[in-house]
Image (cartoon, rainbow, N blue to C red; front, side, top):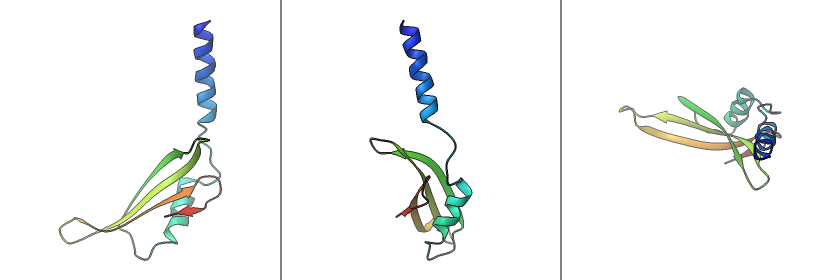
Length: 88
């Protein structure tokens, strides 16, 4: 019985964590880039879930480096993976 419950829970968790999103990683970067006031040298992106009723977001950071290789300018944005809305 316990094994059956664990299998059902595992299946439910896999179906809730779908990897298909209305906004792709590449599209999210393009959307967020339009909000920048500088030309980034580095871009990092990660998919995160937030909220009680979890919703997917692309967390994107853009940065530039100074002459010593230290971060100079940094912008971090969240792009809703379903709607494409940007949060700064």
